[in-house]
Amino acid sequence: MEKTSIILLAISLFVVITFLYWRLTRAYAEKEFGKNMWKQWGTRTFYWQGALYFSGGLTVALIFVLKSASVLTF
Image 1 (cartoon, helix red, strand yellow):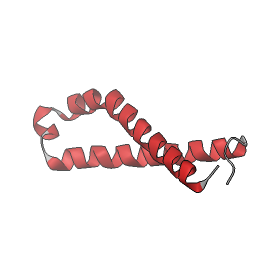
Image 2 (cartoon, rainbow, N blue to C red; image 1 turned 180 degrees about the vertical axis):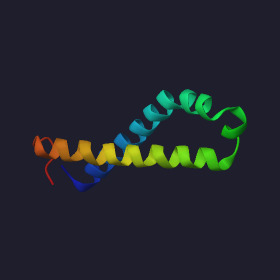
Image 3 (tube, rainbow, N blue to C red; image 1 turned 90 degrees about the horizontal axis):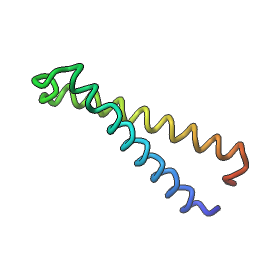
Image 4 (cartoon, rainbow, N blue to C red; image 1 turned 60 degrees about the vertical axis):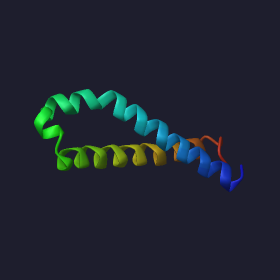
């Protein structure tokens, strides 16, 4: 595969994983912190920081799994 297609694959995986994480955990996080705390920037900043770390780690892990399974060649 070309470098550009691998980069596009990684970006699309990252966006999809982040979206799924947001859809699955948004209601729980809002309920856990409460409506008033959820409206503050600090609370949502920590939520999104965790979401991006999780998505980035899972994306890197999936890329390495695909590489070790010889689906990706680079």
